[in-house]
Image (tube, rainbow, N blue to C red; front, top):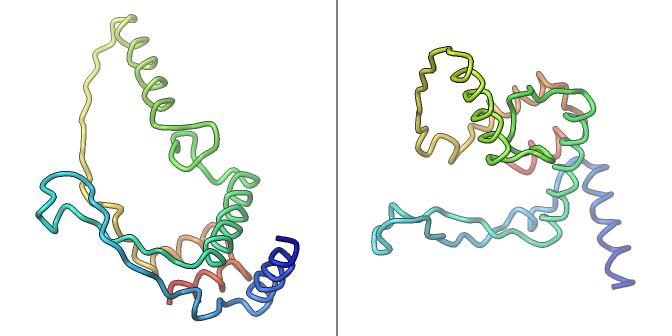
Length: 151
């Protein structure tokens, strides 16, 4: 391990400095992962890309930097529960049920509409992602690295 860490540090620092990844990092083994439903139906599987460990470490560093930036600049709305530390679907449900209980207890009517955006987030258009990142002020080496990674 004492030899691996300095090598990884060098590769990741080089990737950051030149704003791209080594092409081999982008190579992936794509495996079908069963979601639910009929196991014999291909429609119930989704492709999962298994990339290199070094690439995963770089992705983790990028994610941590983006999250730190978003949290420091209060870019999440108060209604954002996904992908936030200390928040989850359960905390969101508890809060909304508490709000609804207060409304009902105080005699206010309550209507609710439920929508299911089936497969809405299976793929993200890269151009739209980069426009959104730019609007949020995420640029520089992180933006360049992600652009290279997704191309």
